[in-house]
Amino acid sequence: MKEMHIITPVKDSPDLTLETIEAVLSSQISVPHTYFVYDDFSGDDTRLRLQWAAQGGRFELVHLSDITTHPSPNYLLVLQMAQERALKADAALVIVESDVLVKPDTLQGLFDGALARPDCGIAAAVTVDEAGQINYPYLYAKGKEGQAFAEKKHLSFCCSLLTPRLLQAVDFHQLDPTKSWHDVTVSHRSLEAGLTNYLFANLPVWHRPHGSRPWKQLKYTNPLKYYWLKFTKGRDKI
Image 1: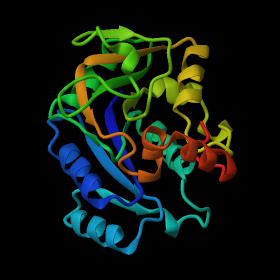
Image 2: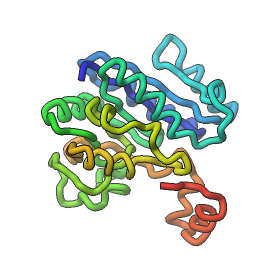
Image 3: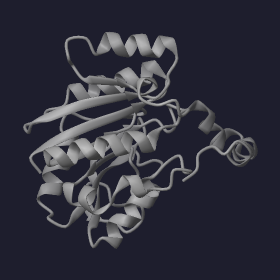
């Protein structure tokens, strides 16, 4: 790996999104890196605030509405474009979702951790709540705080580094286009390719679950309505 390409897909929730972006921009990274923010058909307010934040070349802002007419979510398209760029540059692809706040050492820590493990496919930072307690989607990692370990359960793309070895082994153009999210599939494909996925519980990031898509909070507050929307509207396919 020669460098890092960091991406954040965005769908509204501008306040949380801009906090995520500022945390990434404040990261202490010693390797060459580029930051891409993909705006997935956000409203006018979010678009304008992103454009203001991107002034001066602080990050590269990509409006998906300039590229596709496919309605949001366009996570797969983002992954495909990012994979192509990363492979050309021999870069690690780092995903920081817009409801996550990284620490200054998170991204360099993931890069160093992956580089030290030649079999690494995915290196993921464990997620925690505001009080520092491990939260969704890594509840299974409770009790392993402070450790970095191989994990056969799927890793989330909340804050994850995908190595060039993984990007070479798994063609994102072959992923199921009917699904909304692809972290489960890519985690499994990584293992099938003979790679190892690692969870870094020593690099916690603050995760505010589904902050970028508030309707998904219904999973906790009104699960019947959540699953009704999920199945009748075809939302949130994993």
